[in-house]
Image (cartoon, one colour):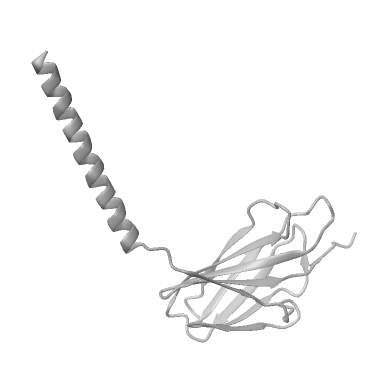
Length: 161
């Protein structure tokens, strides 16, 4: 009986030590990889499909342009140029509708290694079964200093038959 109690005590002590070590590792990871604060900017006075939108916030100076004509289920181009993109880690676009779950519509933009400050990509929008076309884009930019979300309305055209 004493042998069984000793083994249970040793097992319990080892369990407690493992839990404490894990908590310290997780805490250290969270300090190192602390989530950067998100700054949201709504850009309402720019029609990104008619002319490039210029956005200046924090350490970002961006020129954002989308293809002029965006149709459902047809790939379209996205181009973003940054005055200085040395602090930019990544750019990702997400397309959404207000009060409507349209699933995941995220597209990772790529840095052009031949053109400094130039990011580009292709995107594709699904068809909304209700016929709505009030899409908006969320451009998420992660820099060394913070995270920015730039919200831009877009206009989707019905494909001609």
